[in-house]
Length: 322
Image (cartoon, rainbow, N blue to C red; front, side, top):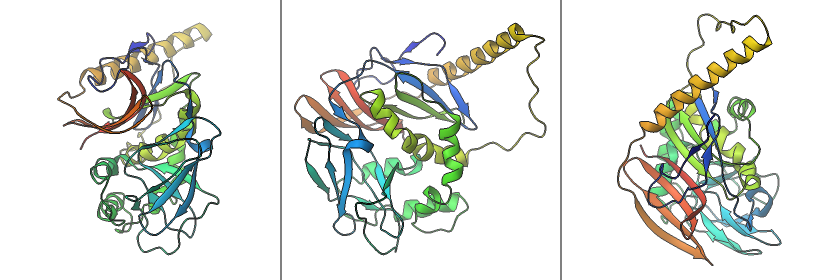
């Protein structure tokens, strides 16, 4: 924010965020994004560059490979892939992939009901599951049932005024021009490696990447899909009259008005942070790669997965529990 704010007390226990700081909030409709900067963690391969979807070997079985010459890949939590005329899938969990390693995710979920064909390695783009589906997807990690999210996707589609069926592409593909407006209206900042997201003034998620390159590659998937979908649903009605322009007679007056506007936004977000719910968090280690640990975090107000090196945060995808 205007005076950078430490994040080390925001998520107590499982995640050491000392040294991470908040920047100036940005707003696009119902979605507020607060940039996070901090010390980069070297040696992690960025997801779009390194991760390749090599095959889908049947419904619910999706194989990823790390094509990077060096650097372990951290698979973004709840990443999914879309391709025309093929079966779209998403993952319920994160994972480590060593350089050159391939991994078959046996517990992937199909997110396009009754659509023939399997994904091949061509013309892929990835997303992150919308916030409305993330808690349920995390609960279902390890469950081998490709249709396990169809009921939840159906309910989400119904809530969006779309046909009630288990086709997530009705939102991701057909509403993509609307959702990417959030990406276009919110700007990545120099050195940004994470973000706090609020939807209609309520905490929605905290995303931390190992470094700015990693975060830049997952940015669209987060801001347009993971948090853009709930923000789109919460969009306020257009005002009856356009907002009044700044009252300024010269450039100095305009700058002062802008500073007052920013200060008001910072104070508002500070109030949201102060009102964040608190409660005990349960942390369960899932796997290790050298000194890195992947853990699942659950609590009454928060859920997600984190990667740590000792007490240092390397990656985090934490979202508001329903």
